[in-house]
Every structure is written in structure tokens, then in C-alpha cells.
Amino acid sequence: MDRRRFLGTLPLMAGALSCHRSGKRLIGVVPKGTNSLFWLSVHAGVLAASQQFDVEIEWNGPTLETEYARQIQIVDAMINRRIDGILLSPTERTALVSVVERAAREGIPVTIFDSGIGTENYVSYVATNNVAAGTLAAETVSQLVGGAGKVALVKHSPGSDSTDSRERGFEAALAKTHTGLEIVAQQFCMADRAKALAVTEDMLTAHPNLDALFCSSEAATVGAARALVARGLAGKIKLTGFDASPSLQQDLRNGVIAALIVQDPFSIGYIGVKTIVDKLDGKTPEKRIDSPARVVRAADLDDPEVMKLMNPALEKYIKPAGA
Image 1 (cartoon, helix red, strand yellow):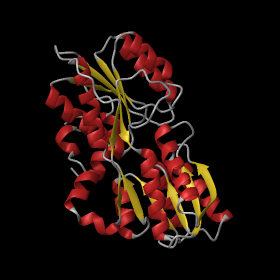
Image 2 (tube, rainbow, N blue to C red):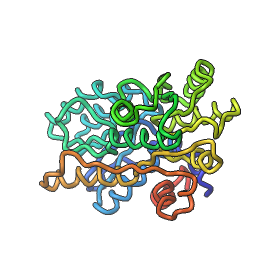
Image 3 (cartoon, rainbow, N blue to C red):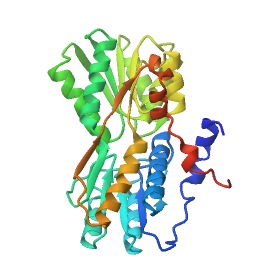
Image 4 (tube, helix red, strand yellow):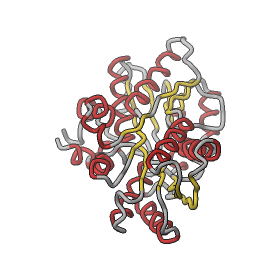
């Protein structure tokens, strides 16, 4: 199946997994959202681990990455059913603390993945080192504009620890090392591509001499890329974004995007499940497990290792609804 058509089945697959026990350990996985290649890649890694460690997975998350109340409901329901462990990517750093601490009190191990939380009552935290990724983005932008220029930021949403960390890492690197870069505008896109397009257009209007854009998430990058194309500024303003959906890869190849900071969501999902299994087996997983990010430019898209990272074998693990 074509990758774009496969991604189109994503909303149908979000709740497609059976949740009956079959005598196996049951691990609940609650992502921030379910409507991007990033989360689908996490899902594939989770299922790869479930096969390796002979556990059952219940995958259930909100459609949008701002629905923290829905996440709380999902985690509460999992705790009430006494599942064996939970893997959670919090949509908001503080809002999910109460349910994570409740799970800890009731003896259900929780691993946090992708985005941090304001409590230490979890087994492990598996994520990209997002401060380092933001620093890497700053270095990339500096190289793209020759060390000096005006930069605007399209930020994800307030309270999202992963993207907050990227943004902090980016700004800190500019203040300390890349002092020729000046941030002249920054706005949140609220995890919404259409909103990202709108706020980017606003910043382009307010700052016609802009040299570069940094976008801290897939939604922000997609919207900003559309804005540059609509304004005839593709390739003129250097866009550095995050993650690797098919549309972003195409925009990178076409020169709309200058560089992408790419994570390894498949590995994050796989390792997250492993930490829960290890805990259930009486082992002590590392409290923090970092997953590296790397810069990808158009010339890298023909590298087999890069393509494997950006396009994991999703169809091997996730079957479209009705298949």
C-alpha cells in the first residue's frame, strides 16, 4: 500500500487493537495523539516490542495533542481495569501528574515517553534529548544563514514538555553561541497545521526581511512550509523543522524545507515497552534513556539508513482496518 494511503487509515487504526488479556501481560500505551507519522512509528515500535517480549498492547490516545482531559480519562480507565503497566506521553507537563501518581500508588508501573512530566513517580523516561535537539536546530539554522540573520519561531503548544525543551534549547544556543541570530517573532500553533500556516503568514507580514524559520514540531513545520509556498518564499527563507512525514520529506527534497531534525520514534516505542517488561520482571530500568536526533538535508534522502529512520516498516507491524 502507498505510504500516503496507509497514513490515511490512521484514524481507523487508533483503537483497532484488541484489549482482552489472552493470559498475557497487558500494557496500555497512551500517546499524545494519533494523527501523525511520528505516532504511527511509535506504534510500530511498540508492536515490535510486544512480539519480542510476548505481551499484549492496548493503544489508545486522543486524536489531538492538546486533549489532556481525554488522556486523563484513558489512563484512569486503564488503572481501574488493573492492567499490568502503562506507557504514557503526556500532552501537558502538569495535568497528567495526578493519574501517574495514582498508578504508582496502586502498583502499576508507568514509563513516560517522548514528553516529560512534573513528577518522579515513574519507572523510566524514554525520549529524544530535546534540549540537545533544539541546540542542534540552532546550529543548523546558523549554518544555513551564514551565522547571522533574523529568525522567527513557530512553536507547538504551551505545556508540552518535549517541544518546550526544544524551544528552550534553541533559544539558549542563540543566546550563548549563535549570537548573530536574532529572534524577532514567535507564536504557538497549538499543534494545528492550519493554525501554524496562519501564524507563519502573520509573522512573514510583520517581518518581511526574515531570514529563517524554526519550527519545533511536525504540525508547525507543515503549516510553515505551506505559508512559504503560498507567499512565493520557498527556498528564500531557510526553514528548519522537526520530524519526517511524507509531505515534509517531499518539501525537503523540493527545497521548501532546508533541513529537518529527525527523531527515532520506532526505537522510543520499542524501548518504552521494554522498560515496563523489565520492571515487571523485577529489573530496574534506567531512569532516563535518551534517543538521539539528527539533521537531515535533501542530499541525505538517498541514504538507505536515513530512509530507514524516516520510513520504518510500518506495514510489517500495523495492519489497516479491515485487512
